[in-house]
Length: 256
Image (cartoon, rainbow, N blue to C red; front, side):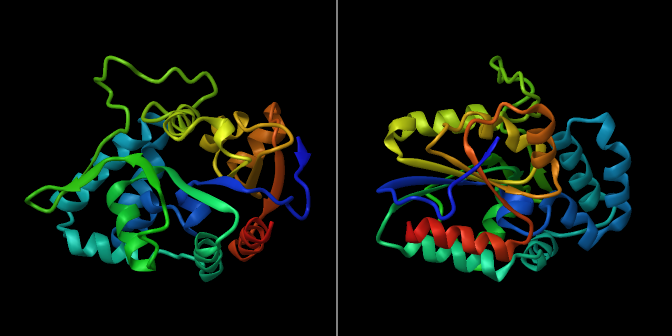
């Protein structure tokens, strides 16, 4: 584990990968929906989390949010529009996207779902930022129930093969590799930057290259804990705690 150069060196072509919850956004969307609309279900989520696959748990609680609590599609979307999203993060992302140099590809890789992400990005005016988004599929049923399912279905013949501890619904490391295979491989980018906070971001960060790539790691959360306890990370690391600090790192990537 080594600190990345400060400031970042200049490159011609780079990829930036964002986790969503507590990384791009300043909250956790799966938890926020219940905190905003039904704290009883938020408490139930906390109680049941050790006993169920998390995407399945979210799906079950969303059915209860509709069937028992009567919450509608518009109420769920309104809650997402209220979810904290730091203006500094928004500025940093928009400025990096608008920069003529270096050429930057944007990839969003998240264990949230398409409805939450699409609603929040639209509300924040960030719909056109990402070249690709990989997350759990979701849609509203005709009766208003939000149906969320795993990125890798439980019944799929081929499951992911992660040995690092990714959840059954998705291996973020395999998804990063698959994205890169669709876009020319690791060698297509002079630098890959990964913005993450949680333990499930550890697997993709392990795949980043020494001397080229950078992990922007949010302090005091699961990713920092795994890096320090398990080791094996080859890329450089830059640390951040508040989203206002992340704006400065994004500006470095733009100026580099």
